[in-house]
Amino acid sequence: MNKSQKSGLLLPVMISLILMACWSTGMKAQVVSPLQAGHYFPGVINVRDMTTPPPGMFFILYDTYMWSHHYVDRNGNRLDGIDLSQLDPRLPDLNVDMDILSFAATPVVEWASKFKILGATYLALVSLPGYSYSKARIFGEMGPGMIDTTLTTSSVSRTSGFGDLMLQPLGLAWTVSSFNLMLTYAFYAPTGRYATGGSDNTGLGYWTHQFQGFGYFFPVEDQSTALMLGLTFETNSRIMDTHVRPGNRLTLEWGVSQYLSERFELTVQGSGNWQTGNDSGEDVWWDPAVHDRKSTMLFSANYWVVKNKLYFALKYGFDFAIRQRFDNNLMLFNIIYNPGILTGKKKNL
Image (cartoon, rainbow, N blue to C red; front, side):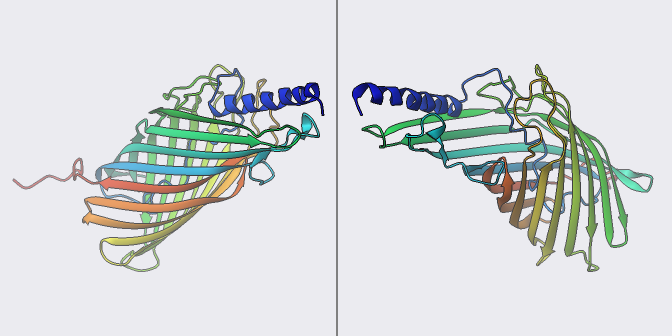
């Protein structure tokens, strides 16, 4: 191969490397990302969080740490490389290695009424815009092959800020014998930073209406054992400044909680999260018939540091059965604090 032929091969290779570097650093492009995973994050809540609470106000902090080394495509294959043979059949593959780390802290304020509506406890809550931080590193390497050297590119990007607001104005919880049922309506407002093609987005850029139903069965009289099953449905508005409306989503969750003492609890929970409707709009440039999905399994050990007042939950989880999503591992640390206010009870003087 002569020098001019090598130069001809280097051009498409370098273009590919530059494009990958631009993608990894989030270079602004006026296109919408096809990765629209929805607002609701299954597995963050504790197994018993959707049971009927006592009257009063509660403060909750959900801390989520995630890390991923792989993206899984629509066929369930991990993205470990880029096929450059489409540019030139003599080129070797471009190997890709990635490390994505993220942290999010989401504060929640919940209030449960003393009065009843249709025999149910009324609840309302607000999930304040959580603070998140993410760091992504993507490394690409190609060669040697038809060229004399190995070509590499590496890039690191960081993003931080506050996300979207969630408000639940309606929640009704019924308790009948050994069963609990909770029905809720909530919406997400796009308060987080968002710009189409932006490299530092912390919000999703659209409104979501969320409908939930959670049921519990307590097989023993002291309710030390709880079985949970829940459904969450999300329907979305158009992404701001675009003609794209993300498809509807459905989440199925289950969980088992077992108290080994009055304060110490072990849980196992799982979920499936599916896109059920097509992305729609004039700006949809990907195949809308391809729907993402993932399943998650989590294990936790939880403890009431102060009985019925201060609760700590430590969880580990992992994703599986993934399509068109990142393959995540998760660590969560959740705190529930019951200050004993707005209970509707008068204190003795």
